[in-house]
Image (cartoon, rainbow, N blue to C red):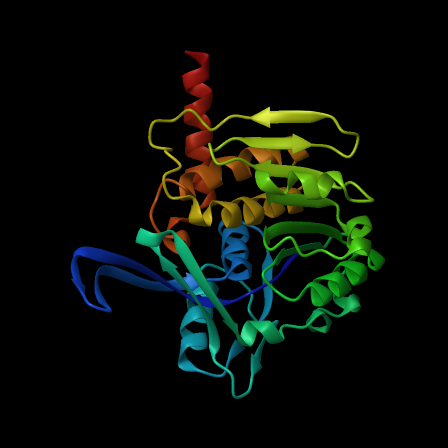
Amino acid sequence: MIFVFGAILQSIRVSADPEALFGPIHYAKHYKNSVGGKGALQALAAAKAGAKTALVGRTGDDELAKHILLRLRTHGVITSGVAKADKMQTGTVIRLTDENKTILALGASAKTSADQIPIEALDDKSIILLQTELDAAQNSALLATAKKAGAATIVNLSPQASLLEDDWENIDYLVAPEIRKNIVANAKAKPTAIYMHTDGSIELIGKDGQSATYPKPALEALNWKHPEGAEETFCGTFAAGLSAGLSLEKSIERAHMAASLTASVIGAYDAVPFSDMVDECLKAVKAQNEN
């Protein structure tokens, strides 16, 4: 079982019309309302990859929460671990595409607590996947609980570089943008680290310091022009691979292809692929390399 601990948000993507600016008012030429939050999207990716996945977080007691959770459950995400915060709204993330700016209002997600996953729910077959959108102290508490229970832990060091010093000993796998490499280099314990580069390539550095590079998959349709949801898809698919008993290399290979598919389509939620699409693309790359 994969437990994804993270933010559950409404996502609003806005594209402004450069010809429609009237003083302080800027008209939008397009907007889309969808599911956001790293926790929600990573759980979606893991479920679409075929893994039994539970999302643990917090929403407001509002209609927006019902809409978001229903969409996640439609794809197989277990949401019984999602709590409600009274008198708080479900959080929102706003993406201003023309300004390349993201505004994050956590709302009820800020009240997510590590004790929502009791230690008796975990064992050596469990995988804990978390990010750094939420409070560092809660992440730290969950990592300690998970390691005590023998669960594997995956941390996506994004968007903040907010890990406590003692956390490093409780992390098995770290997934991060390449700009975080210096943070890991200075950590007192070294997890297996996977870095996502802006050119679509992946770099693996093992606990022993040995490294490997995975270039961007060489398919014409995979252009990496829309990377906003690629990290979330990679993390969820990677966790699903490990949960299925795949090797580290195979888990990375599948996660990399899934991330590449997501990064080639506008909109994070709608772009997360199912496992059959990942299989088809992996076969296409293999056939292409053999010719």
